[in-house]
Length: 329
Image (tube, rainbow, N blue to C red; front, side):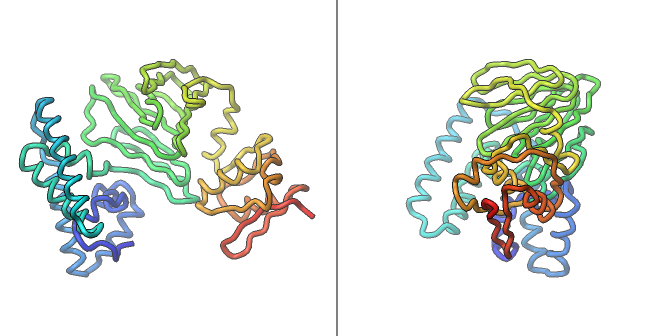
């Protein structure tokens, strides 16, 4: 991965580099420190990337709506022009940065940042569960293959905003001025002041399970839903609605367990892929319609597959990097 970085701007689209820069993930800090080492060329590239980040975080000056519209129009026209004339993806990327830099000098820095700068983030790899605190003291626990990014410069009295991709459990810390804590998903926002809840945002689907306190769900169409403890809200059939679910099933992942309740095998396959990043092949469509019930460990892929194989109807074959499920002969 690192060998592909030839220009300082290449680093700014890498979440692990930003986690190293902002010191938000110890494992990424260690990895980048090791990669940089005593290599002067790598150190120079990283220093140049850091200089870009420092420029991007200069204090922004107020701008009018007209300036915003003009900046967006100019950027769009530049991108269109460059895309048509550039001869390679590398050239295109460099020219994009040049166009954005021109807009920066013209006073449109905020547009540049929104297109190219990632927020500080907490991330988990496949098969990993992580606990961490956000800058305000809010506790967050991430399921595998998940990411929570957050805005910088949180101040009491102002909204605390985070964006989720994957699954996470939040225990939001209350502030003296009762600042709102907002979790953004693809389909709605979760608005709270201090509470405990679980959020999923994967594959175009979003849902919330409220454990404690109260939250308000605000959809993109302006619809609001007030939630009470124990309630579950999801985006389904193009609308946000409440639905009855088992609380223990949804939150079992926090204890490294997974609960199946007449769950079709095809859904189990998707769960395994999301959690471990592996593909599982079904021998035929009939296997996918069979269901599984029970509580299984979810902190080790081999153990999970062995537990599934112990059922009477299914046979799980794991050979090298290939996994398949078929009817037991």
